[in-house]
Image (cartoon, rainbow, N blue to C red; front, side, top):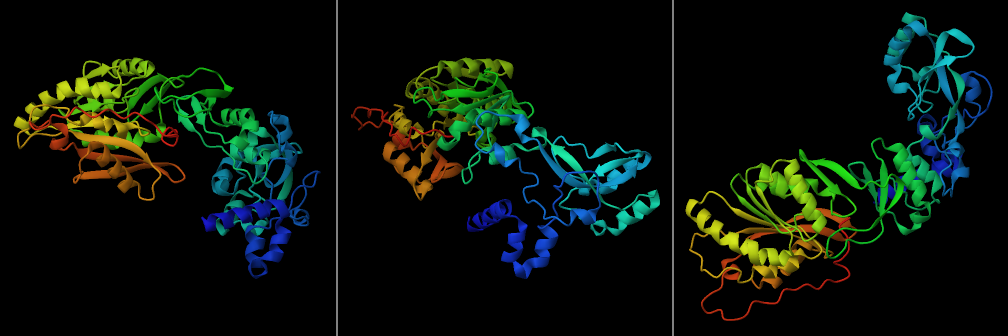
Length: 490
């Protein structure tokens, strides 16, 4: 982190004070500074001139930075980003332009939507090839093989300068946002892509610029037609969040593809996180054909549908009516509607009714065959671990010694310094039993000092089954949530 801060300091120093001051700061590295940093400025206006004239001026370290006048802009004015710069060029005959371009491809100017070959208004025979001012400063910048090629085709190595007009289209999205937002503040150009929707989590200091940021994201990312910003945490009941459209259309019904499976849903009414693709795949890989999956918080089906595609038996549930609707839709879309038994009830009720009923059947069947396993996925990190108490004394019959016990994959957030220990202790506390044979997997870091974890374990027989001596009532389900636990995964 310290190294990153030092590099960032140097980048800002380049932009703020120019390279002549850097040369004074780094005298021992003067030659390196001259070759790699201090290029000559090409910003004088006028017609084509020689490279020697170009080297008389100091190179502007912000050559590809938009005009300083755009700083603080809240309503996007694309014309304000127009900026003249000067770049080195060579003249090449039209009939040999393709051969020369192949040899020079690593030395051409690199800007979005910028032509590297243009007509010379004063020369009908030759075209102008625009070169990268950071890589080409004189004839010595070319390699020996380049000179041989030039000699073969009769290309002059004289480098001249050409005044080029950069426009909004020629700047990258992060360059635009960095120029607009006040100095020293974080620039958000990243987003989660959900089909045609770009989903952003803007910070408070970025909100005055939210519509401009949305429009820039829309402009600079082909295929994105809507940019939205989350404006609250995930709803405690249905796991969706309110959002506002920053730019583009308000169509929130989208289509995504994950691990070769297609999903359609209304992004404003269900929960979907593209960052969980790897975790979905990890769990799905564990299941074998013929296994049984109980998906307690199924959402639109990212665990249930791929598992059904593997010829597993799947029971999928979600309390959110919209998630349930799109779960059924996606099962039909992927032709597994005959393999997935869907329900729309509370997670605790799902465990105590459907899971309880079907669990006994498959435990008896699999205990005899010893071929398949039972898995229960509980992907509601903010509070899923609290639902573990539903497994206490769930089944009345005593197990045989070789009974196949279900494996639970339960997700949870942790802000503890030792998140694996923390999640394991929480699960043991709620179950009232020690989990000797369990694994805790780091899914991802969702925020500074906040991790999403997955604990996997076989439900102990003494937890799952009532004993003859057990006359106590079943414990009351816990449903309280702290403010910390109610924060979003995103």
